[in-house]
Image (spheres, rainbow, N blue to C red):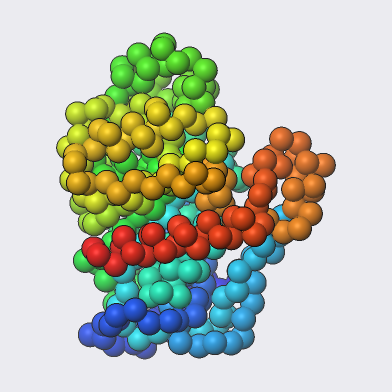
Length: 346
C-alpha cells in the first residue's frame, strides 16, 4: 500500500486522546509509509508503520516480491480507537524495514504500533562506507523513531509513551544492546578478535573500519542508551564481544534473547547469545534456544521457488530461504507467542 504518514495523520487526529486500548483484542493490521526527515538533511529515515484497525477490508499485500511471501494489510483504514504500545524494529546487516514485516503485522493485530526503518549505511539500499562506519548512528536512529512517534501531532495521541519496546535481529540485536546501556569497548573487541580472528563479527567490523580513528572510537564508546525503552527482544545478535562486560552486567531492563543453534550465519552462540545471557544480571534475561532455529528464521517466509531464484541470480544468498516455508512459519508462530507474552508483562 502506498500511503504516506501525512495521510495517516489526518486519520489519527480524529481520535480521542483519552481512549485507551483495553486488554487483548483481535485487530486487523494497517500499514503506512514512515518518513522522518533529518533537519540537517544528512540522515533521513524511511520505513513503515503498522497499526491496529477494526476495519477488515480491503486487504492488500504489504509489499511485492518474487522471493518473499507477502502478508495482508488493510488499506485506507481508520486506526482502532485507543493508545497502543510502540515496538521499534531494527533489521540486521544489509537488511531493510521489510525484513520483519511478518512480525510487525502480527503485533499490530494484537494491539501494538510497530515502526521499522531501513538504517542508512547498513541497509539493502544504503552501503556507503563513509556512512557504514558511523555505526553509533544505528541506536540513535531508533531514538529518533521514538521521538517522532511520541511527540509529533500525527502520532503523539496514538502511541502510549509509557510502553515503548524495541526488538532487533542480528546487527539489530547489537543496536538493542547499545540502547539498553551496553558500552562499545574497542580494546575488548581487539583482544577478542586476536583470539578468534575468523569470527564473523571481527571481519565485518574491521572491514567497516569501526572505531578506527580516535574521534570515531569516542563516538562508538559513548552512552547510546535510551531510558524510554522498557524492554528489549534480541534475535540471534552479533557483536556481544564488542561490549564491555561491566556495562552488560549493569543492564537492568528486561531482555528476551533468542539464540539460533543452526549454524548457517557464521555467528557462534558461545561468543554471542549464550555469552550475553551469562553476563547480564541474574533475572534480567529470558533465554530461548529452540534446537531447529536458524539465524535466517527471523526473516520472512520464502515463496515456492524463492530458493532456486536466489541460487540462480544471487548465488550464496539462497541460504536465507533454506527451510523458509512451512518449517519457518511454525517458528514464526513460536516467536510471536514468546514475544507477545514477554511484552504483555511490561
